[in-house]
Image (cartoon, rainbow, N blue to C red; front, side):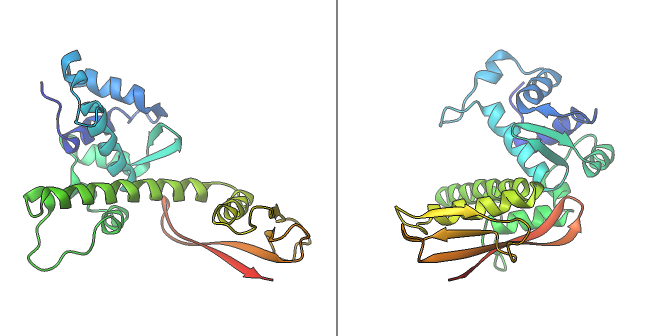
Length: 234
């Protein structure tokens, strides 16, 4: 059979995860391909970039379900069904698509981050409402938004000290501290709320003190509105 479109892969992919175990993506691809009776020829089909067509479409099916809170990613390259995912799998055994995912605010927010707001009378690019160049631009924006959301989730799941060190690493990568500067993580008892210091010169006379904060407003057990802020004084 031809490789199904990515929306048609959502239901079988979610059904393959209802055992509540962690599944590497390679294993999930094998399970779904077997259930759909895809042939070796089907699996060898590639998109112009050289990526296997089936792997690419399943990747986007997983990405969108993750953004809607149906899946979690406990570690790199591994997915697991969530409570919400089990409910959706039971309610929509035959087909899960963007219309189903749009029931969840996290998915709507994800989509809004990857494209400008529509004007009255606009149509979706999937409905031939845009040029090929615009469709490519939208796809790139969605890919960037998906990566940003996953990175944010991973940072949020780590201990506070990880965020503090990450902020210092980002600031030094941006040029703070200069070629001869140095960054030191504080973040311990008696640090007066300071999480790090960046020395701008070899003598340590010019310093930037850093305070990393994580603000969270709970909307759903999976989704937190998290902001990062670095404060400087020196």
